[in-house]
Length: 360
Image 1 (cartoon, rainbow, N blue to C red):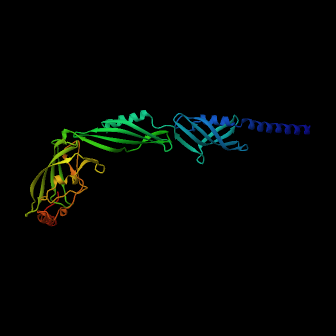
Image 2: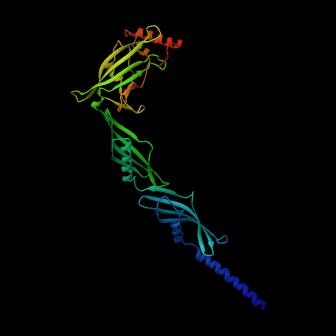
Image 3: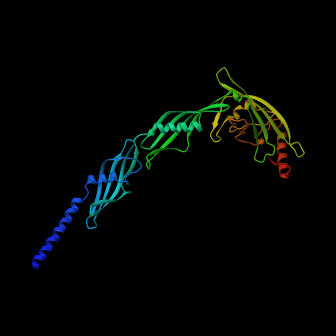
């Protein structure tokens, strides 16, 4: 009897172990089931809806004693907009109901690539054009798009115009869009690149005046003051455009006492219609050095430098300015007024040292 009881327990134990081992072997997830679990899991790539088209299981560790199955998998997936290679670590645990997927996490040692299949959508470009024509440009039209999928960039080029009170600008605008693999979207760079600027002045500029103060150095107590007025636009026989300016200048010198004495100098000069947009100033300007033959007079003792530009606002008259200032000492020593100017400057500096005159 005792022998039969032992035999019964041995057989029951063997059957139980066999059943457990058999159930474990049958319940182990197949490769196909693993891919289906990954595709359906919410922790799988969430930036866009993509479908797995291929996969590679690089290694798998099934520990029956710990009732755990760990899978290292790289999935090839995508849609019409992106292609991906994504590596994950999937962890299954064995429960009474079978193997259940408990964890899905990115495998940081495996592949992780998200690449665009095309450039920025046309509707996004149109949205940008609409936004810029409301706030920055008068008109804007796409003229080219250069997509570099390898670098995740798309460069859009526009022809743009901007109307002002005194003139109309035309320019080429370049905007770079960068593909962000985290959310699978193109985003524009923070700044636009603008080049090939040109300007056509309007007749409305005639009569516009700008007041400019020109200091000879930062301690200059009596700077020169200019009133510059645009008086005429015209075209010569060669088709070149010219603009005529009147300059009224109050140049001051020191003749004694504690106050400067001013006298007026009035000039008219025509300059070729060659304007340049100064990036550092964000203004259009005339180069004053190029107008020297029209402006300069030996009796003035003043010369403009090559870096000196008269800058003005295309939308408002009022205040203009020069981009560079220089010392009166640079005047030609053969000028008739050279010695008088030197005396005036010396007297001005002496007055400053005495505190009798303060700079503006």
